[in-house]
Amino acid sequence: MPPTTIYHNDDCSKFRGALEIMQELGIPHEVRWYLADPLTEIEVAVLLRKLGMVPSQLVRKSEPLYKEHYEGNQITEAEWLVILAANPILIERPIVEAGDKAIIARPPERIFELVPPSSTNRPL
Image (cartoon, rainbow, N blue to C red):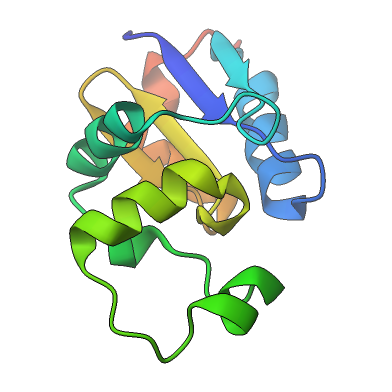
């Protein structure tokens, strides 16, 4: 199984749900505290490729920062990439990455699309 990374935000209940599933299934993983350790523009671009998304699709539009500064503005995909790297709070969550694939784990059970239960260390 490829290394699995979950991008962590303490305030996100969906993150906690996804992490709980991973722990219950015995999925080895790393936690990236992306608010304290923001992703670079290159890391955001790589993650977007794995997600199959463009930067504007990764924007968390419910965030006050989005509503106050970006909503209704004409912003290019290249500009969104810079904005997301500079303002990680705007990145949709939780993101789980394994090898060359990633998903937004909403709902948390989407983890099974990335790491099928049969490939985990879960006891039968």
